Image (cartoon, rainbow, N blue to C red; front, side):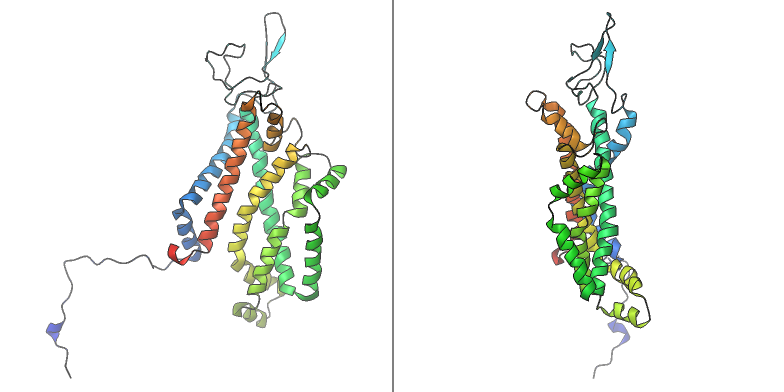
Length: 326
C-alpha cells in the first residue's frame, strides 16, 4: 500500500482561483428578481407602465390648461372664439388661426379642451381602476378561494355553487342592473368589478390551497394547535403568492379594458370627467375627419395593456423558471 509523501502535494500560489457564482446561495425573491430583470420584455413592460404613470401624475399639473377647461379668446369685436377641433400644434408655428401662440400637443376636442391634459387625466382613472383590481383580487378573490379550498366539504360546495351562479351571469346584464340603481361614473365601474373581477382569482387560490393544505408544514402547524385562519393566511398564503401575483398582473389589463368599454358605451365616466374609454368614445365619432382625437387615448390604452401583459409574462417565468433558464 502506497503511503502519501510530503512531496506529493504542492501549494497553489501565484494564480487567481475563480469562484463559480452561478450556484451561490440566494433567497427565493432574490432569484425571482434576477430572473425577472434578465427578461428584456419584462423590463420593457416595467418601463412602459412606469412611463405612463409618470406622465399621468406630472403631466396634468404641468399643463397650462385644466382637463375640463374650454379654451377660448376674445376677438376685437368682443366675440368669444372657442378653440374647437384644432390639430396638434406648438406655439410659434405657422398655423393660421387665432390660437397660433398656444401649444396643443395632441390638439383640442370638439368642446375646445386640451387633449394632452385630458389624455393624461384619463390615464389616471385607468390606473386607479388597475389598483382597485389589485385590491379586489388580493383581498376578496384570494381570501374566498383559500377559505373555500381549506375547509372543503359542505363549505366548499356552497361557496363554489355561489361562484358558478355569479360567473354564469353575463357582465353586461350585471352592469345594466347596476346602472338602474347607481349613477354613472367610477363608482359604477368599481361596483361591476367587485361583483365579477375576483372570480378567476378565487379559483386559482382554491386550487393552490387544495394542493398545499396537506403538506407537512401545514400538518405540523395544525398538530401544534394553530387555528384554521392562522394556517390559511400564515402557512398557505405565503406559498401561493407566486401564482397569485401572476394572475393579478394579467387581471389588470382586463380591468382597464372593462373601464374603457363601459365608458365607451356610455355607462362609465361622465363629463366633465374623462377616462381613456370616454376619450376613445368621443374621438370615435370624428375618426374619419379628425383622426388625431382618437389616436392619443388608443395609444395610451394599448401601451398600458401591453406593459402589464409583459410584466405578467415576466413574473410567470421568474416565479416558475424553466430548467434551461436557470
